[in-house]
Image 1 (tube, helix red, strand yellow):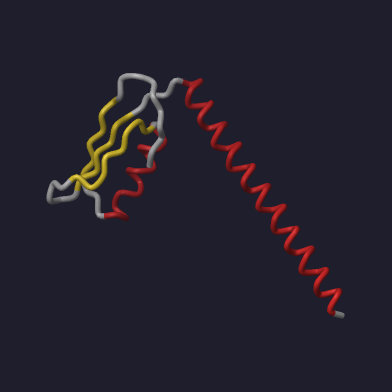
Image 2 (cartoon, one colour):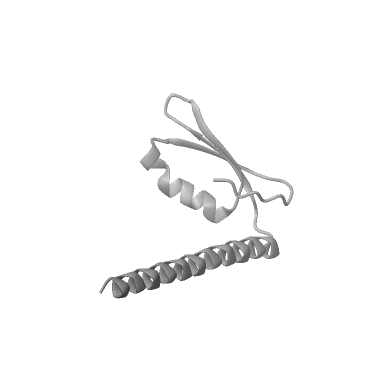
Length: 98
């Protein structure tokens, strides 16, 4: 009985490691595909400043793609952000910091 439980535990642990490896590989592949896609399509990049009603700058984000700016705009009410300043970046550096 104990050996069966021990064996099942080892199988479960092995399955967990396999799923973790698949998940990590998929995340890396997705990141690489996204970065290559952004580089090939030559998307415009933007610098974004987020400010509150009082005019205090909460966060400045650099080199954001159009889709990232759209996500920021959709989420800004959740964080108390009521003003956003967007400037187009000249150049092709892309650090995609969030």
